[in-house]
Amino acid sequence: MTASLNFQLTGQRALVTAGAQGIGLAITEALLQQGAEVHICDVDQAALNKTKTQYPQVHISHTDVGNEAQVLSMFAEVQRRWGQLDILVNNAGIAGPTAAIEDTSLREWQQTLDVNLTGAFLCTRSAVPLIKKAKGGSIINISSAAGRHGFPLRSPYSATKFGVVGLTQTWAMELGPSGIRVNAILPGIVEGARQDRVLSAKAETFGISLEAMRTRALERVSLRRMVSAQDIAAQIVFVCSPAGANVSGQSLSVDGNVETLAQ
Image (tube, rainbow, N blue to C red):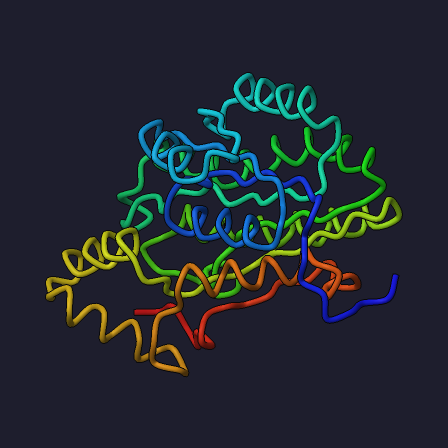
């Protein structure tokens, strides 16, 4: 396949996990703008309803990606509707606790793994047969700058995001002969409510103000600014489109060059 400057996704069928808010909603909107048909899931029914009202053409499922039965039910619905799938975006994820390792509970550790890592596994396992029916497609896993740097006080989160990179490289090799491209996107400090919550928790841990914590974090970003959800969505459109036809097995950072996450 020869790549071209073509970012259109007309006729492509895409599933975005946690696609009703934040980065997921930006991804949903970008895929729609490029002509894709989109199915989203989320654990927030109110957010799903709001997105459905705004974009009536979007199909929705109330699904916890860490729950095998719910994931299987969602993919059964996708199979009934489309029969095939072209794009899977494993976007669902949680921040996990902000705590020293000795203060991190097993429950917090397991919950982070269930959503961030097991969720990607369960969705990909169900998506692959449908993508093979489509004779190839694209899987995008959302990792993080914490998937290439150690992240003090965020052990469960960093462990899962490094794990996502490992899965990406493994699946790219395993699925490449079937014409399935697999890439990871590594966001940095993404502006928005979720980032405010993370920075607030770290500010409390260090006993400093939120503004001081924000400044401290951005001192370790070469461009000295946060990225937007739309920046992440644009990169995903690229790797899914004909323009990214020969990009696979890559961990693509969209982070302004995060130099370190050490505080």
